[in-house]
Amino acid sequence: MGQGIIAGSEVSGLLPVVERYPLCITPYYLELAKTADRTDPILRQCLPNTREMAPGGAPDPFAEDDSTGVPGLVQRYPDRALVMTTSACAVACRHCTRKNLLGPDRHMAGREGWQTVCRALRDRRQVREVILSGGDPLLLETAELDRMLGDLHAIPHIEVVRIGTRVPVVLPMRIDDGLADMLARHRPLWVNTQFNHPSEITADSTAACEQLISRGIPVSNQAVLLRGVNDDVDTLRALCNSLQRNMIRPYYVFQCDPVMGTEHFHAELGKGQELNEALRCSVGGLSMPRFVADVPGTGGKTPLAALTAKGEPS
Image (cartoon, rainbow, N blue to C red; front, side, top):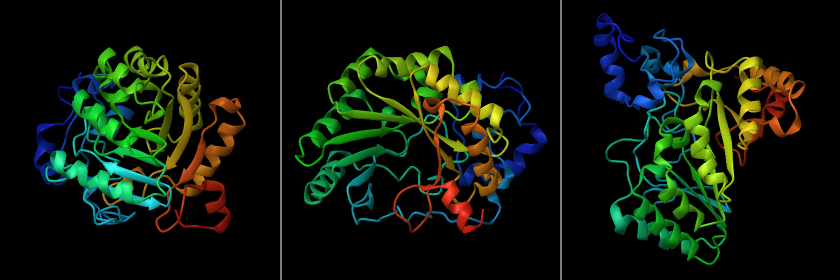
């Protein structure tokens, strides 16, 4: 698996795509594809597509770039702040909300840059929760992440740290005893990951999540509704029930963000609301996620039902 997926005749047409949006896939994740057909839900998430170059969307719809004047620090809500810890990802997801922001020059500038972020957080006394994001924080060295978490918990008004990561899905072997033990020392700590399709739930990925769950670290899932990947009720039902069975909370299903280069993944709002209702009628409450959209210029996540009721465009 993994050979012959992109024909030689296609390569030249895809070069401008990967020059703009780099290609990065772990062997583990690539092997999850059941077929070399590029419509496979795994391959659709990680292989380049010329439709990524189509017009539409915004490079930074949530104005994250330099939103605070502190490199790497994003604050959209009074009580929460996000730190972009690294530009590195194990897999460059083609639907990524930050695909126009991340790059080789987009990273925390070592110890000095991190201390600048910490000073800014100390001054923002309303902030009670910090989300470590990126890129993927779990690709940092264990010792470096240990130090960063310790620095955050030393700030009196920071009560909770959350880590956003796709490592359990695309590189589960990274979550070993050493990493899990270190993270457990920094509770209260929450981990949000992103399983989008039942094929991603494997013995390896569930074992990685169990490393965290067994140490008292809650793991929640924030799926993205992706056209051609999971935009049917049978797939979502299988995904959410499998998550629940493995003690991973089905938390959100996000409408794909209005980001430049992701238009071909977008499902209409009406489709999302239809799936919301169909899933609600076919799974138990603990398997039921919240269907929401992150709308530029608004505070908090907006339920799809509220958007469709107002007639918002898809």
